[in-house]
Image 1 (cartoon, rainbow, N blue to C red):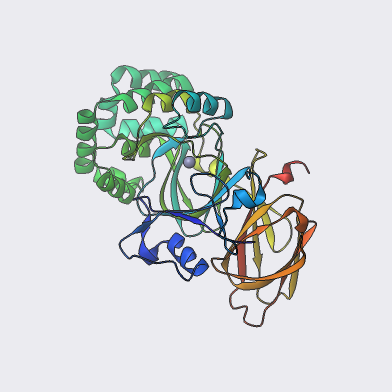
Image 2 (cartoon, rainbow, N blue to C red):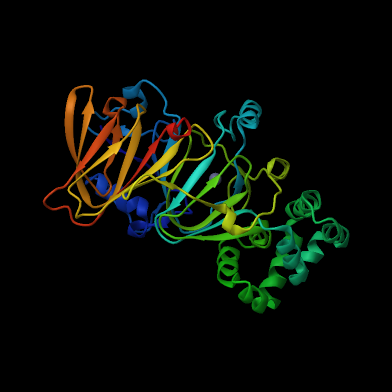
Length: 396
Ligand SMILES: [Zn+2]
């Protein structure tokens, strides 16, 4: 089944044709009307009720045709302006939050997520090693002043998660006027220090996009990560993060539960965030998620949860036919570049579909044990596609 994704126009998205979301939506659907000044932030592929995919042939929603929910939600994101400082609750917290405040926490599921860069991508992920955070606090005196002598002294002495938690709590609970003053002083008097820490550009950008927002100060606590296209990060429950800039594919458990605490015009649940977040300092390099390679053409991003995995298929245009082994789980494939004929088995028998950039197909359980990617005359570039599926790799 060919699908159309659900496009979300959140204001942080890239505008018009600059957005990978808009480019893919246009390639998918010739009737898609592009507006230059409109932000195109996300495209959802799956069965989540906040943005269910449509089956092209019949116009029905995917959940109706499948008569079930998929355990994962697959997305493309195009980010111009930072997304909030956030964590996602674990299953147990999600159930409680949804029961208590369903208007904010819209479902009862956890939301571990995997982000794989399509263009150079910038994100904040997890706390820096505590020694690095101490260096930052010492170097940027307005921050030290904001947190206060006592907590900073304690952090110096103990260098543990508890003293880090105390400092971060004070920071996140500080009043707006104090935060604004701190940011103003850093922006004015600490250009050189920001520059030598390679933070000047990103500080200026998010400070301009979110003036006076406490989230800007998270730069001194969290790891700033530069992903190259094809590199990924995995965010388990309660791992603090913020996506800052770039395009990516993202796959997650089927949920929309986000606990936000900065860099957002949306509702901030600071108390929930500071009580949920994991205060564990680790170097940035530990945050890259390594896929494992199946063969020359395929690698798999398989996180430590059952809900989802992402398969990256990259076939050179010189290769005639490639056979991808799969298991009996419904999957969604998004094609990014190149052109191939996909040969697979459906419940109506064998079928061939030509796929190219922007094409989204649902691969049914009947397609197992393999689908074939055949060469076409006008195949153009090397073929590249991402497939979201259930994490059956964990069973292996
Ligand atoms: Zn997230």
